[in-house]
Image (cartoon, rainbow, N blue to C red):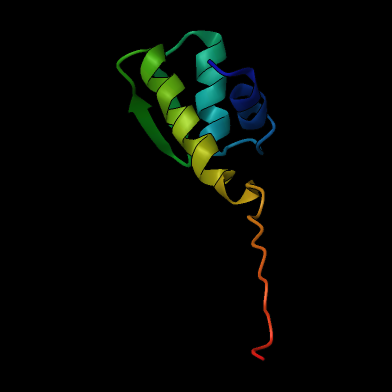
Length: 76
């Protein structure tokens, strides 16, 4: 588990899906309850992958913008 992903998930508000997954992962359990729903995961590896996908989805827009250089010349 990437420590950045776990830190991000634990910083989410209580009751949030990602926070619930992170708390289950750190507790070593595979049953997660959030927003009134309970989900049984097959293992901690599945929770870890779900957190990684959530992190990538939520933080995908923080990429550095690309830069393009344009050059123009006057026709003679």
